[in-house]
Length: 197
Image (cartoon, rainbow, N blue to C red):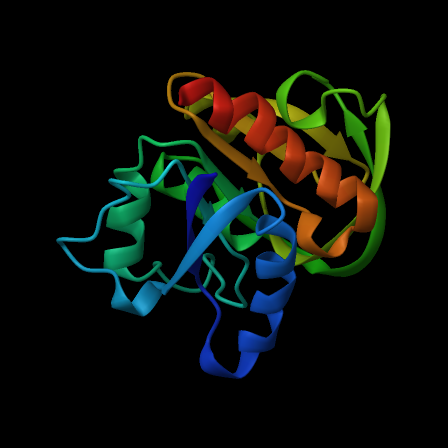
């Protein structure tokens, strides 16, 4: 079985959200979780097959991310999936621009632009749960070396992949999106993580 490092970006009073990640990811991989505050200069993803970076109430438009977290993410070379805040963080540390909008906390229909990889076998549209105020701009994502995989009426970059490194991000929350979220995560392990082993 693969080993995944789950980078927990939630503050102490949001730790109940972690169970959604653990329940879903453990179907596909052995999970070791680390609080992002415990990352340091010696922290590495060596020995892991993949990394998943969680959501967070942190707002990148309000302040810089914690230095140890951004440095860790900037150095990742193993297959990585950023979710919501993790998606925005992956974009930000590679040079993409984060914007802000009114809070969205609802189900959204996402249009799949490139069905291979994360969305293999999922058709042209998928319903997923969103919960965010920030988003990545499509033009800055492209300029930072990413390819947009999906968009929606509320968000121009619902999913992306880096063109040179095995980095992926989704703006929505697959860990709370039922079977559609499970399929996205399953595709990450089948088509991204397994391909790098």
